[in-house]
Image (cartoon, rainbow, N blue to C red; front, top):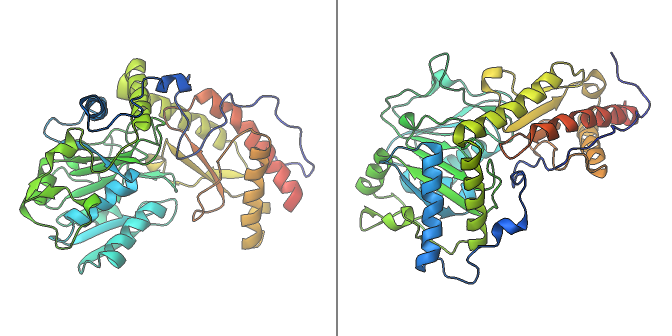
Length: 396
């Protein structure tokens, strides 16, 4: 059935929470400022109480994610970007490197490795928006840098179930994983990874600016046995006199964290524990993807950017506009039409911050992490149809 050329009636109901940003993401259901009333404001993060709160974030995160006991987990500055770049500058160099680039942030890591670090034996394995690179071409004897979930493309690595996983259980190089939109919503195979990073602002809805860095024993061994072949600023230093700075992984931080953000991170972790832990978080995110998939199967104007259902993200749910009236527009008009659709949604306060990432194809990006209620996504879907029909009437 074709869309009407006149502007349709607005849907009768709106999401209770219209926040669908991919970062910072929606707060947990029921959140209020009261959740931060116990924050240690005006206190030093190096005092015993402040250090204990930071250590609590580390230990609750470790337990919730099922991280092996011999891994180190620390809080670092600069959100996930800071955590990834600390690792790239500190660890890379002793081995050749493969970097998987299939969306905007993984492309940034490729640029760091090739243009900034200028590593002589680095390969960039490129995938178009909507698909992973050729995983069979990855050489796991090299260090491999990759995002588990492409926040700007809605493409993620497949789960461990089913076909053989592209990450082998044994590999000579280090598997360095940016998991910022995957941690707490997707099950990470710790036995196949060596470095994992994420930030507080994604699946648990924490505030920005703080990153988490997890290191396997193999990664620690590399740090302690092979000094970085380049000068490092203080914010990137993970070792001193050839030994890991253990304090970073106990609650001491390289720079001053916000204790207000720390309190908020603890609130999200405690909420996750109350609702059933990692299984419940994954279930909530999968339910959000299922709601969009049911709608997408009937849509005649939008489809998943991720073509393979096995690599379809449940957190950064990305849709492309593929109606004939839209694809026939000149390229500049397509961008304008996509922006018009998103602006209509925002003007109605129906959904906020759902535009596709600036480098991605025109479309929608709906955050489906664990803090988002499936009922809110279901309420948003008729608004997408309304905005698409209204945009067609204006542009076709």
